[in-house]
Image (cartoon, rainbow, N blue to C red; front, side):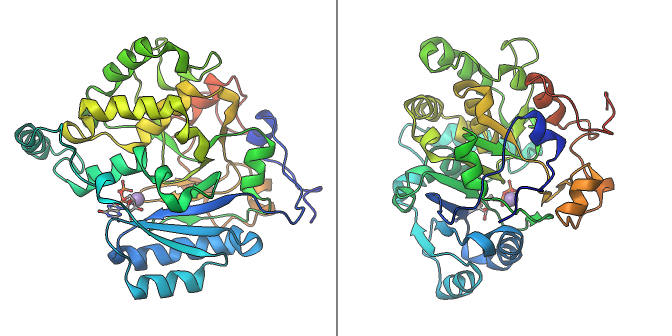
Length: 349
Ligand code: GDP
Ligand code: MN
């Protein structure tokens, strides 16, 4: 179909990517959603958005994962909405339980302390399992063995624009391994020692650090301190082989043994982001523009009017937070990659 006349957002021009031609061949790719049965009606509109804006044309599979069995209603409703094949996986208990090296008392004390300090999800156990699972295990689920690419989808998200190229083919043809839309600062009190652990890891495994990495996105002083910038992982399009790599396995194992997923409340977003910034070539990362995205409570709406019109975006650019919300990190990504800002975006926020 006609991707020829399509104009590109500035971000895609400066990132030097091209849109793939539809050749009727599908990539080895699937959507992946971790959810509980009770998430069904928050998830339904998310699926509708993805289907209406993208997948009704491509029919990619959708893998649903849960730490409990999905019920019949969940399966019936989601399989009716997805235009590709749906698969439903149960998470093995060893991927969703407290490891034997975690000290229960220390864990309870940590949660109590974080609760009293009002740390977001500071007290929660299931949220910790979720973050650890998304960090270290989803890509090991046997239903994902068949795939090379994934797109993570969560309940309550929205896609604002038509996506009329195959995003997975785009990743492969442009040599991309990790794609994001929103990027912002993490709450320091959820990850007090994550950077110290990461620095020790870097000393222990210098071979895993890519020579052309994106350290400047995650650190403002060459790696001494973490600046809290991360890619918001509720949207990710990425290579499963990256998570399966020796570098990432070693990193996850190292972090996991330190206990920080439990004694602190490490999110999968900073863990994924630090790994992508350090172990990948910076050219393998991609900022998706022209798509528009919402997850509570943040919005991306393409800043260029011509793109919003072409892509039939249903969003108000006044609500976009990419360029002017002070705790966002997209500018830092552009700076770290030496990319010029889109037309109309003020040089400083
Ligand atoms: P937030 O976006 O960080 O506020 O966290 P969410 O509540 O959206 O959870 C992140 C993802 O994990 C969503 O896809 C949820 O449906 C899923 N999730 C969260 N907790 C659980 C859980 O205990 N079990 C399962 N199966 N999924 C969960
Ligand atoms: Mn969410």
